[in-house]
Length: 139
Image 1: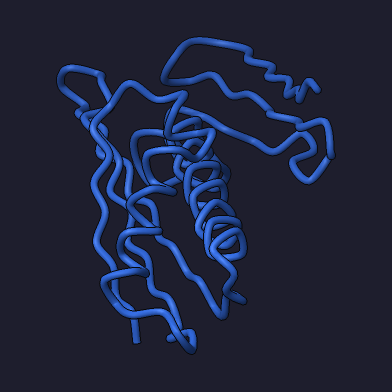
Image 2: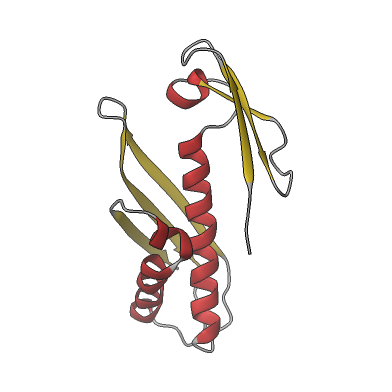
């Protein structure tokens, strides 16, 4: 299976602009620019998209791991915060914050164990070479 996205850019770094389109067209000529990446502009940016991909992948992985363990997942909500160092122009890491609703028969310890496994094994986590941290609320 292959997934594709396309990007177009025109102009200088600070004055230019571009568009990003995904295979599914959920992003269809969605604008991005210096302002959307490094300030407050309308549109998206690569780092935001990496954070969104990681949050989605990880949350699905938690649901899959719970299901494989014989449990029916309830609500799972994840926020991914990507730490971008603007001086060095590197991603320092991603912090995942998971909030999960209590599942009958699943202790907090078991839930955390499953979530940690999902963090280590979700497809996007495995693709990234940055530190990934996780905090969990289970209530």
